[in-house]
Image (cartoon, rainbow, N blue to C red; front, side, top):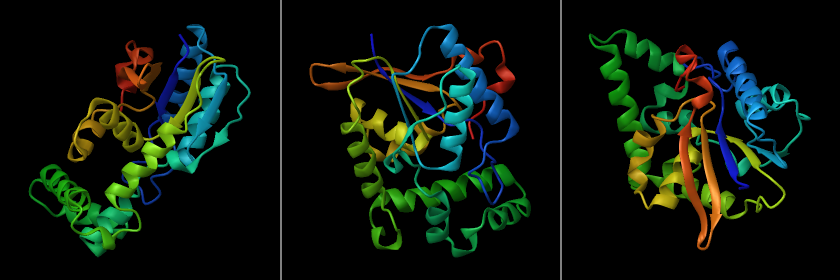
Length: 227
C-alpha cells in the first residue's frame, strides 16, 4: 500500500547555539535509514522536505543512502517551531542556548532544572495566554502543520517521503488521534531521530498506520537518539 512516510531528522547539534546542523551520528543515521528503506523496497515517488538545514541534510543523506536522486520539494510548512523564541519569551536571557547551559551548570540538580525550565517555557507558549509574545503562537503552529497535512499529495504513484521535525510529527499525531495540544512535549520527547511515522489514506482522510518506527536501528541501539 502506498503511504506517506514522515521522517524525523537525524541527530542535530543539541546544546549548541546552532542546533540546526546534523551531528556526525545524525548523518550516519540518515544514510543508514535510506539504505534500510531501499533494502525493504520502499522507494519514494515524491519527496518533501522542510526548509531547515537539518531537514535538508537528512533528506540528502537518506536519499543518497537509498540510491535515489537527492532532490526534493522544499515546503517550509513542515518546519519545526522555533524553540529559541519560546525560551526567550519565557526568559530573555535564554535567547542563546549557551545562557541556558550556563544557568543549568550552576544548579545542584542540573537535569531537573533543565527539564523544569523547558516545561515552564513550553507551558507558557502552549497556554495561549501570551500569544502576542511570540512570532508564531502554539495555535498558529498547529494550524500551519494541519494545513501542510491537508495539502499532502495522494501517494497514488508510490510512497511519499516527508523530512521534518518532531513538533510537526506530533501535531499530525495529535490531529489524527484527537489528542490535546498540551501533550506536545510528552509525545515529541519520545520521537527518535530518523524515526518514521506512516500515514495511509482512508475513507475519512489520512489515518495513522504506525508511529515512531525505528526497526532499522534495532541492531544498533547506540544509534537510537532523541535530540
